[in-house]
Image (cartoon, rainbow, N blue to C red; front, top):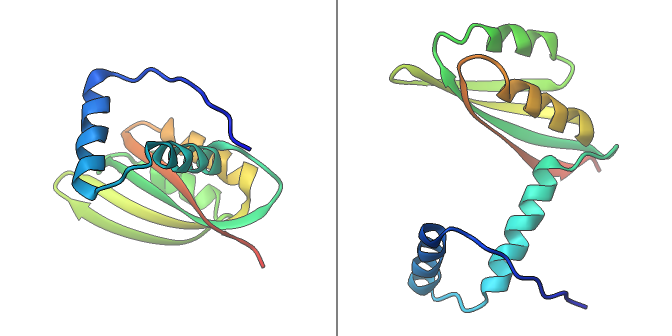
Length: 127
């Protein structure tokens, strides 16, 4: 069973979506919103489920708090890929743990000085 809802979005966002749908020949606009909502909830809704995932992080190269923070959370961060792009650092942190703890970890990372972008992607639950 489906529920119909109405949403408001800025005109510019609407136009970008329409161009994308036309370019990709996608006719089911609702499917796009369903995917976006599932991804949002997956990234932000905590649970006690044990998961593996990636935290994508972009920060200023002088953000010294990031490395210290990572060392303080070695129980959840299992691997780090680090690259330099100009004066920024981009990292992919492979993480594991209870989903709610990883959502909280992501939120705390986003508050560190010099951090520009953080996104948590749940890859898979533990099997």
